Image 1 (cartoon, rainbow, N blue to C red):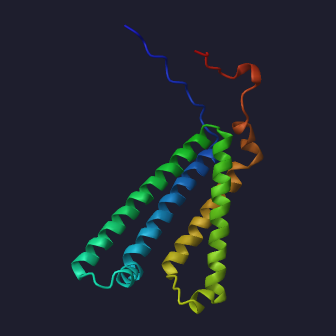
Image 2: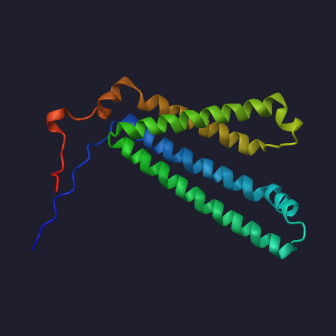
Image 3: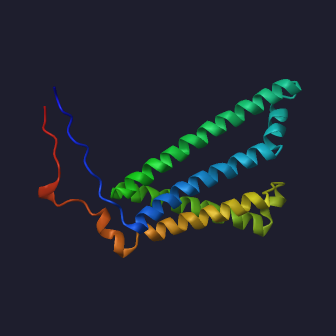
Length: 176
């Protein structure tokens, strides 16, 4: 009877890192909910389908709309899963995951700020684009959550959590 090696214990992440993990996952969930609400509550997708295929009947349009919503739901689920995986790796002390969160978080904040600027400046209405106040509120909340994550994972008190093990203590795999 062979015994399996015990699973390596992961050190408990500092409270700030754990908070950052849950904020990151929460931001992904909230962003997905906002996207799905926008998709299902507006007639934008239906209007685009009508423009692309004017000869489709109502039942065909409804089927295409349902397929688009299901695909979007699946895509949102995959994105939340990816965010959770990266957040969990970051909580285990993986610096590459902290860097990925930094890149994605900063990118999301920049895109959110540009979107806010477009809405506030009136450019969105000039191009006949509407952004619902609810969607804008979701965007502001997710930007604030992402910003909090970036602040938390770069606190000096958690820097040691992301340092790699000394060279002599790194695990190596035997070559075959």
